[in-house]
Image (tube, rainbow, N blue to C red; front, side, top):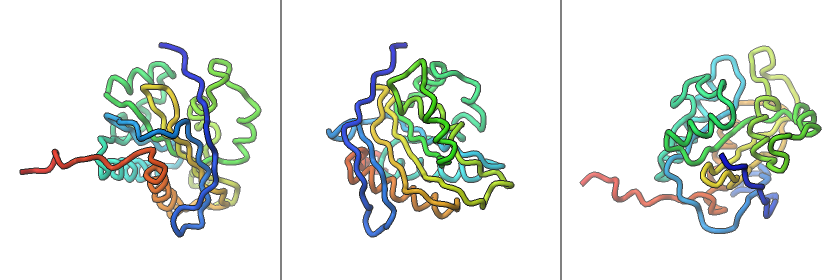
Amino acid sequence: MKKLKKLMIVFTALIAVGCSSTHILISSSRYHSPVSHSKIMAVAVIRDDNDTLRRSIEKNIAMDLVNMGYTSVSALEEFGAGGLSNLGQEKTYLKLCSQGIDAVIVVTIVDNNKEKQFKTHKSHKYPDNYYYDRIWNYKNIQADLSAENRGQYGSYFWEAILFNLNTLEIECSIQSRPFTSITNQSALSFEEDLFKILLKEKILKKQDVSRLKPF
């Protein structure tokens, strides 16, 4: 497999979406029109006791994508709870491509304290590929939502990355502003903001699905 291309982040901006007071940090590698995707997989890197929140987030994102006219699947439904966890980077890439998946939306809750530790370490294999390296390190910087830690105060933020498997580049990275306590409502709010941004910034667009309608 060819080496991953270096990501060129063209712009970074803080915006407010609609009437929401949630500030969103956007990074994108391009200005041009939306890229066509055959199949987008929704992945929630969430550490909780029974995958309830992970299942909900992946299902909601996949449904939103389907409603926009894309073909989309949940990673949990497609591969199971640990379906890809034992595969390395290259084998994971090949597995996704073999299933016709050409893009992934990866969502997690980042723990700021853990992220500070992550920032002190550089990837040796892909030193210039920040976001690719970041996705693979979500397991190290994600918030712990297990029962004994749920409800504890800290410093967290939601993050989503849309990654193109054909070009091996990000199309968009989106972060919420920091918050101190994790709730299911914050997940719903971020999902809503996520799709508003993807449409507004023309990262994705509603597809013409008229040909799929029954006669």
